[in-house]
Length: 241
Length: 241
DNA sequence: TACGATTATATGTCTAGACATATAAGTCAA
DNA sequence: TTGACTTATATGTCTAGACATATAATCGTA
View (cartoon, chains in turn orange, brown, red, cyan):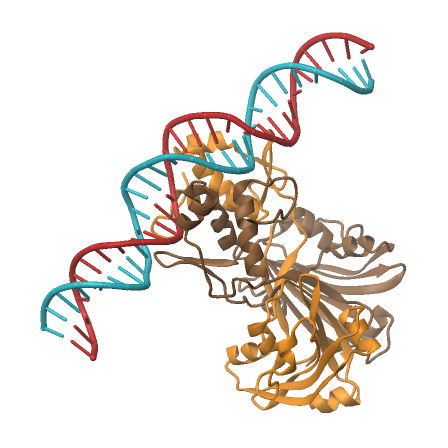
């Protein structure tokens, strides 16, 4: 009936899951379609309900189907396209490309948070912050400049971290667990300052990523990354329904 | 022992899952930490192994833990930050902002695929394509211009769809299931053509999104979206570990 | 010391039941 | 027609087992 889809012989629940997924992905079962009831699949595959249930539960967790008591299980409406945008640590990003990574701390200052700092971090109470400016390069060519603010009340250790040796993004990634983050992506043209830092012409396009990171309710850091817009590309590859 | 975390009383496996998730998210169990064995959790929660297993399986599916036979289950290394970048249908995006949506088909042509078309779609065989240029506006201000190619061998219906009435992105979203897509984000400065279409100055920054969409091995469409870079912002909010 | 075989063990999958619970659908009265 | 009550049913959760399987750890040998 069904063609061999994959390797030697996956487990039964995986086969059930794959069978259904295939039918959904090919459009054979369009959004809104009711997939067979558990007891029907139990008969079809000759297994217990728990096995079918495991397959359907995973499909539901992946938002491929929606399960409704008494009604059945239904193929989800095409969800809002959601892309998994991988923006790893810049050092990792560059070395993954097989290019040599260079890093340069341009500026570092520990200070009491100014009104602008508090605004940028979205915090109300005054406290200390570290402001950092640095540059990342690949094969000795400027790759991105970084302008970062770290909230010391959330990350006290950052006061003594050696950001001349290790980029703040890398350090934070290894030392601070985060629960939530937000990226905002936009485009600007390079002003004098950006042009000099990135070694590009004034007026050249730049891709801007503003990232805010939180742990629970606490703001950890706010960072603005500036990439030469014509050379750098952010790639997001993802699956959808 | 454990504080009430949430609502009235979730099911046991959900409580187990939430307990562990909390410990991971607060950093109490850092990356690499071995979480208790299933049989230990069975004792702690006084339930059967299947219940514990369900909780751990879901955490593994969410990439919060990694499970290794004979070794145990371990908190994942901070995964490469992966952002859920919501780029819904532009019409939906604009109406969700409470602004009036405007759409204008600027160009539509059905033709045999040129070498450039085949290259762009990443297909080898010649076939027919629809090339579309259109403009989206919000409150009568240009919001984005779209330049799209649809592979008719994958989406034959697109030959007769009325793209003067409905934007191609919206039409595709409602008529064609997709399995995979890729976004590439970059920045450019507006040339004469883009400046005119977006009603911005030549040399102003533009955010560019190139999106390719596939169903299985078949290419469905390739689209380039151009946004005024200083006004539009792509926001990605996500959770991580 | 290095390598190959053995063993112990944690997870992976599965079963044949059970009871809980939300809800679609049907029933009946106002 | 509307609303309230009842019922049937599909999913949700859970159990107490079972055997499979990958692999870390151990042991024995060259």
